[in-house]
Image (cartoon, rainbow, N blue to C red; front, side, top):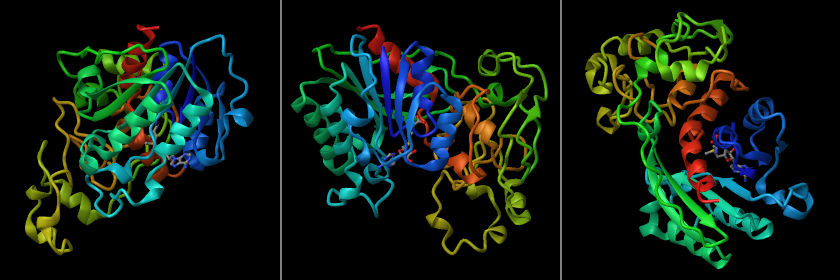
Length: 352
Ligand SMILES: C[S@@+](CC[C@H](N)C(=O)[O-])C[C@H]1O[C@@H](n2cnc3c(N)ncnc32)[C@H](O)[C@@H]1O
C-alpha cells in the first residue's frame, strides 16, 4: 500500500504507517522546522514544504503507482476546533476550514482509503458541526466512513491521549474500532529509566544512555543504539525550579505555596494541567504543550527533555527533531503517537 501524509508535522503518523509496511510516497508540511525534521527522518519520501493550498494532485502527486492501494492520511490543524480555544473556535473563522483543502485533495487523488485524524473535541465542537461537515464531505466523494476515539494508553503508549480517527473507504469497506492491545499500561518510569540523567536547562543533544534498558517498551524504542539525541531541557529561572520542588508526583500548581506564586495575578485561573508533576508508575497525562503547561519530571526538579517527551509519544530513539528547542517541543507535542497510528493503519490493512 502507498501513502500520502498531509499536514505531516514531524511525521508521527508516517512512522506508524511505515512500521506496518505502508510505502509513504509524499508528504506536505509548511512549517520549515517540522519539514526539516520530516525530511531528515523520512529520506525516501518526497516532501513538499509548502502550504497545502499550493498542492495539486496533477502537478505534485503524479508519481504514484496506482496499481497499488493508496491511503491518504493526516489531520488538519485542530486549534480552531478545540473546545479549549475559545478565541479561535468559531464556525465563521474560515482559516480553520483547512479540512476543505483536505477534502479537495481527496477529491483529486481518490485514494482507496483515508485516515483523518483530529482532537476528540471535534466531536462536540459547534454541536458536532465540524464532524458532520467532514463526514458529509467524505460521503459526497463516495466514501463510507467509520469513526472512533482511541486512547493511546490502551495501545502501549505511556500517555493518556485521546484522538479521533475517521476512516474512509472508497470501496464500501467498514472498519471496526481497533481493540486495545494493552491491559497493563506502560508507565512513565518504564519509558524514562534508561535515558540520560539531565538537569534544568541542559542542552547536550547526543548523550549516552544512563543504563541498560530493562522495560520492554524502552528496549523497543532504543534498539541497539548506544546514544540518543535531543537531550534538551528548557532553562527555567531559579524561582520556577523552586516551585517545582514543592510538587509531589501527581500534584500541580495547587501544591506551590502562595508566596512563590505572587506573579500569578489570579491563581484561580490556573487549570489543573499547569505545573503537573508526572507520576512514575502511571502513563503520563497528555503532553500536547508540555513546555507551556510546565509538565514536571517525576523525580527531578525540571521540565521534560525533548527525548523524554518523544518516549512518551512512542517515537523511536533514532528519530531526530530539528530546530530550536521550542520548535522541537512543538513537533513532539503535535504528533500522533506512532504506536497508536500503527494500530490504526493495521486496522485498514486487515480489511484490504
Ligand atoms: C497536528 S500537526 C501534525 C502532526 C502529524 N500528523 C504527526 O503525526 O506528527 C499539524 C501540522 O499541520 C501543519 N500545517 C498547518 N497549516 C498548514 C497548511 N496550510 N499547509 C501545510 N501544512 C500546514 C502545521 O505546521 C503542523 O505541523
